[in-house]
Length: 172
View 1 (cartoon, rainbow, N blue to C red):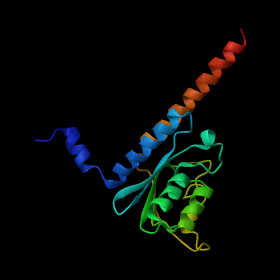
View 2 (cartoon, rainbow, N blue to C red):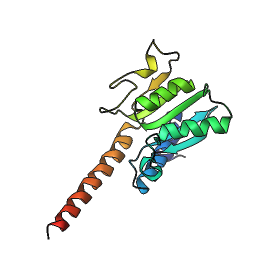
View 3 (cartoon, rainbow, N blue to C red):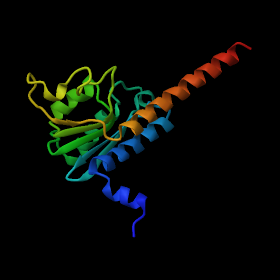
């Protein structure tokens, strides 16, 4: 007989399973002292690419998790059109990344936490369904939202606490 954890895991949706993989990437980003955002690209039910925020490490303003994952997916699949692919990302994509999703012709984006300061898939803008653009795609929001948001909140809470500690040392 299955225990409650096994039943819960057995009932976990594909969206949750793939978002957990994106969360793993986000945790890796945090270990590198990057903002903890992670992404995976899924095609035919399997992860074909992974990405995590690496703007500081790479000194690259385009090194967003989902941007990097889509570039890697294009290389892995040998094509620039990512039709048939779903991008899973822990934070709602910005304009740059949402624009790349349009240009790459993804089928779907699934994100965890909304981004009130830069979200371009429904919060500030909705690039996914802009009739002026040449491609539209499906968006699913709020998958493992609490886990995704908590990871970001705890990262920034620790950053603020560290700055406060460092400022306190400067006063002595």
